[in-house]
Length: 140
Image (tube, rainbow, N blue to C red; front, side, top):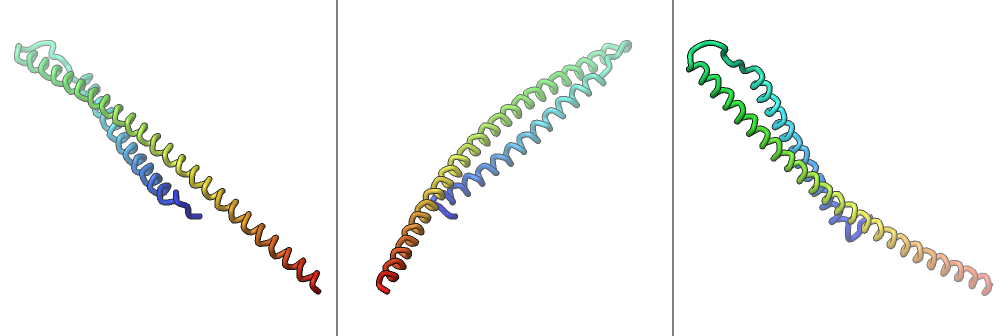
């Protein structure tokens, strides 16, 4: 049954679906960030320091370690940023769901009110028909 809230409910439902899609994308980005962090940790563990050789190889190994530590730090920041994005998306989704439920409730109350009015109207009509039938029996 269509009410004055029907278009609003439809709009709120599409908004909620958009927020769900946004949350799914944010979760995918978070997983990508976590994978990058994990791979940078694995790369760090695979690096070996030279035990002998000239000073250049020691300096090159140290530079590689420093670069890997910077990459790990960057990936940690990326993961933290994506976690914050996921949290924000979850809050937006929750707000959208609450709005949808609020308008669904208002719509259902409106439908109940309309149905009650229709039932009352139908009862009055049936009463009128019964009275008309009763009056016709008295005339005969």
